[in-house]
Image 1: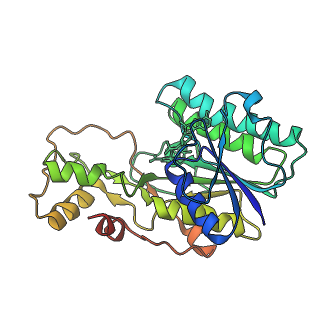
Image 2: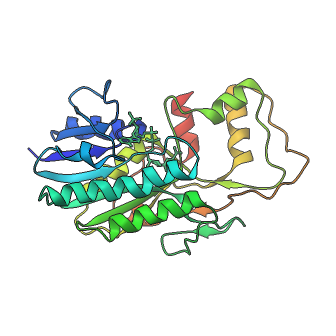
Length: 275
Ligand SMILES: NC(=O)c1ccc[n+]([C@@H]2O[C@H](COP(=O)([O-])OP(=O)(O)OC[C@H]3O[C@@H](n4cnc5c(N)ncnc54)[C@H](OP(=O)(O)O)[C@@H]3O)[C@@H](O)[C@H]2O)c1
C-alpha cells in the first residue's frame, strides 16, 4: 500500500486525508495536536518548527503534502509555517534516506500583488507586496528547489463547511459591497482536496498551478447572489472608495486543462451546496 504524509493536516489536509484513505492509501496526518483526524487516517504528533520531533517519520513515504498554515498573521508565524516548516521537513526526509516521488506544497494567490483587476496565471509576475506573500514564495522555492520533485498549488480563499464568512455576513445583514469593483478568487475545500489528489497522480506536472475556481468574481456580485438566495436585502456599496489590497482575476486553466474537473466550478454551485 502506498504511504502518504500530510504535514499540517488541518481543514484542507483532513479532507484530502479522508479522500486518500478511502482510495486505499496508508495516510499519515501530521500536526501538533493530531486528535480527531478522519477515520482511517493515522495520527502523527510533530511540530514542523522543531526538527527533533520530525526524526521518526513513517518510512517509505511515496508522496508528501505540505498543508500547514501559520498560527497567526505575524511575520515570525508566517516564517515558521512557510519557510522553516518546509525546510525542516525536507531536511528530515533527506536525513532519513526517504525518496518521495513528489512533495506538494499549498501556497497562496497572495504571491501576486496585482491589484487592478487584471488576469493572472502561473506565468504572471509574482512579486508579493508584503511579507506574507514573500514567505509563501520563499516556501515555494524551498520545495521546488529541494531534493525531491516538487509541485506548488497556489490556492485562493478557501470556503466550505464551517468556513462560511460570506454567507454569515449576508445572513446577519453586516455585508457591504466595496465602493469599486473588487475581484476575488476562491475555491471550495473539496476542490482543494480534489486538486491536490489530482496533482499527486498527474504523470508530468508543471511546477506551479493556480488553485482557484473557474469564475473570479466581483465580491459585490457574490454578496448579491447570496442575498437573493437567502431572501435578504441586497448589500449596498460602501460610499468611501478604498483601493483594495487585492483585486485580480486568477485563471485556473492550467489545472483544468491537466484534467481536473471542479466539483464546484463557481461560487454559485459551491455556496448553493452550503445553504
Ligand atoms: N485559508 C485560506 O483561505 C487559504 C488561502 C490560500 C492558501 N491557504 C493555504 O492552504 C493550506 C491549508 O489551509 P487550511 O485552511 O487547511 O489550514 P488550517 O485548517 O489552519 O490547517 C493547518 C494545519 O497545520 C497544522 N500546523 C500548523 N503549524 C504546525 C506545525 N508547526 N507543525 C505541525 N502542524 C502544524 C495545524 O494543526 P496544529 O495546530 O494541531 O499543529 C493545522 O491542523 C495552508 O498552507 C494555507 O496557508 C489557505
